[in-house]
Length: 79
Image (cartoon, rainbow, N blue to C red):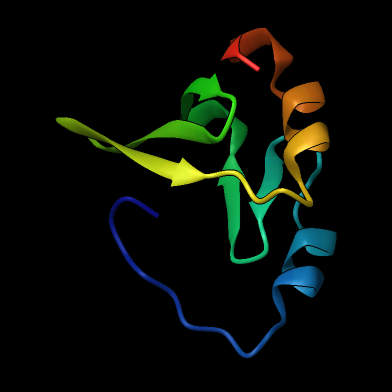
């Protein structure tokens, strides 16, 4: 989260299954993002709000690219 970090012994696959698909999207083998935090989606990355004053660019894994573009198509600029 923006305010804290959490450590868990769950796999990311398990965490993905627990999170509501309507609110979260897996974009990489190591990254799940909250859809509401995504500001922009390009062909190879997404820009997410990481703090009140900044944003962070995160890579889209090739395995997840088609799904990410489909799910976040309303943000896609250079897919």
